[in-house]
Length: 252
Image (cartoon, rainbow, N blue to C red; front, side):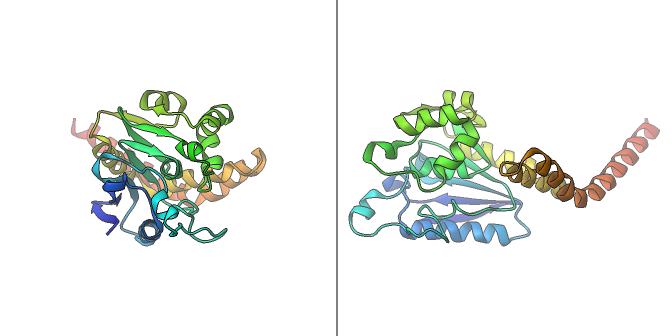
């Protein structure tokens, strides 16, 4: 199997398992990744997903050897993307745990995730610039939203390496951790996120993404409308918190 799916409590861990090609994604792997995240989305018992790669590398992009051998990834304008899940809009958060290289289509998968935990010796970049392959898995859309237009154009036009410290500085990385610790740190972050009351957290996450394509007035109205169902959950949580606090004060 080129993709492994495991469960860590409330977290689904999806691992690209092709270390002999630095986890480059061929057509079958792209299909397996998309299927894995469809399963995560449909599973009410899984609250967060972590995407990572086996063997010390996140993902080196599409498998160019397979493409050159006449077995290209899926290249259709709808349905699954060439790298698999990168057109999917999920209702739950995904964290990328990045070691080694996250380049070309691998960078696009990392940008598809909500958060990126990056090891200090990792390298990110639009390396497909060097071989004349365009970004068609959301890179030109998501990268500017993450790091801003000017920085995105710098990375896209030059295809240069981005070290972990720069990735953190420009917002491409959300956490930088020692070598070998990305998965453990991502799982800890996932446990923290999964521990929050879900309705409000998911409503706020969805509002952030909707706000990217709405004007300010529409975005504010949408935030209120979609947040209201979570207000009652929040009110109940506040009541419990106040009750527990009062009980604690009474004991002391």
